[in-house]
Length: 113
Image (tube, one colour):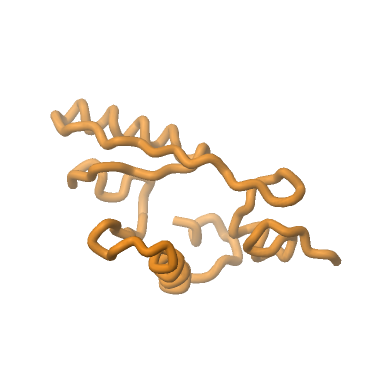
């Protein structure tokens, strides 16, 4: 869904590869995770069963809504794992938008102009 916000960020295949490479570096086996392209805020969470959903503070309310809708349809709730933002050197969250704009590098270090 990142592309829908008119931001100059890498395309989905590039972002997926970068994420897959990072997960591989962590040593997490392929059968332990699933990467799914989202075309709406809920993805397949209203139909399919999942053990957990990992969200940011920004998307936490969507996860709560997912569980509300699942409960209404008789499905079990999904465990919500809320991950806090990682702050850059300037105490503003690291984001793909800031990286692409050249404000910071991928580690959150400020780039000198």
